[in-house]
Image (cartoon, rainbow, N blue to C red; front, side, top):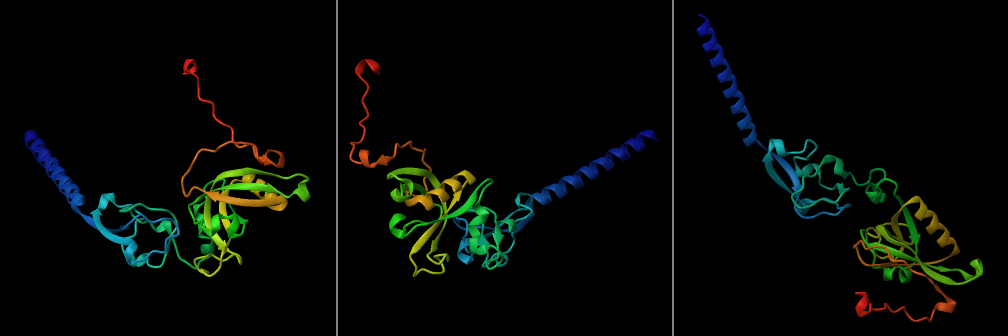
Length: 242
C-alpha cells in the first residue's frame, strides 16, 4: 500500500512538471506586437508612419510600458533619442500642444541643468547655422565703457544647444521666415550667473564644432596690448629630452 502511494505521488509530480514545462515552452513561443523605431530618432521628433514599425517579439522580451500599436503614437512628440529597433515606451512621448510642449527641450535637461537663452544675432552665432544638439563655445568681449578696459576671452566651452529661437522668441520650426536671434543652451547655475553677467557687460559670440564633445582648452584671452602678439610656438623636445 505504501509503495502504491509513493508511485502515485511520483506520477503526480511528473505530470505537474510536464504541465509546467509545457506552459513555459508555450510562453517562449508566444509573441506580441510592439512598436519600435524604424531609424535612429533624435529627441523632439514628431512621430509619423515613416518613423515607426511593428515587430512581434517573445512576450518575455517586451517592456511592460512598450506601445503595441502605431496608432497610439501618431502625432506625438518623442522626448528622448532612440536607436533603430528600440521599443517605444509610453513614458517617452508627449502630446503636442499640452503644457510645456513649446519648450520640449526641457525634458532633455539632466539633474542640475537649466535652460537659458543667449540673445545673439545671426552674425554672432555662426551665421544662424546652429541647431539643437550642437555644442557651442562662448566668447566674451567686454564693453570698455562699462568695465574700463577692453578684452576678449573664451567664457564657456561645450554648451549643449537645446533650441534656436526667432527674434520674437518663437521656435524656428514655426517661423522659418525669421532669422535666428536666440540660442537656448543647457547650463549649470554657476554657468548661468557668468552668462547673465557677460550679457549685461559686453558682447557674446558663439562658435561650434558641431555636436562633438571636446576637452576644454585653457586660453589667456586678448587685450589691446596683446592683440597682435604672435601665436606661441610649441618647442620640440631636444634629442636628449625624448
